Image (cartoon, rainbow, N blue to C red; front, side):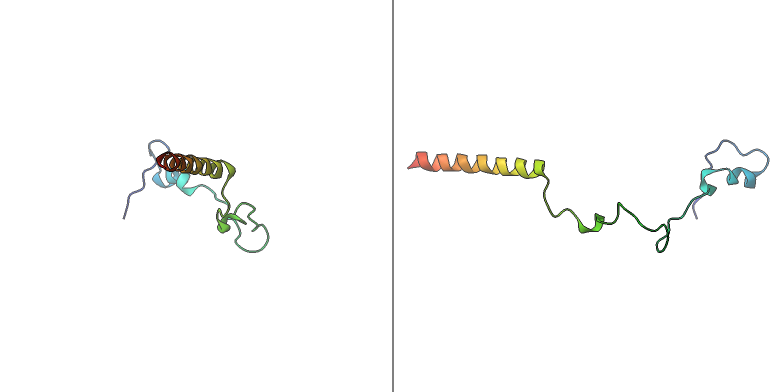
Length: 80
């Protein structure tokens, strides 16, 4: 079992009360998984993945591929 590291100063009189004011026992609001308030706008399309390349990545790869291809074509033409 691991020991919890108390973060809110030193415990003086009441250890239980000191732990209650620690971030470990702060109030949290649970998000509904079903029903009212369960709609997650960000996660709706997140599962599909990135099926289309972005413009910057596609252009960079395309131009580097063309320069290497043109270099090879020039070498072949000069060879003949």
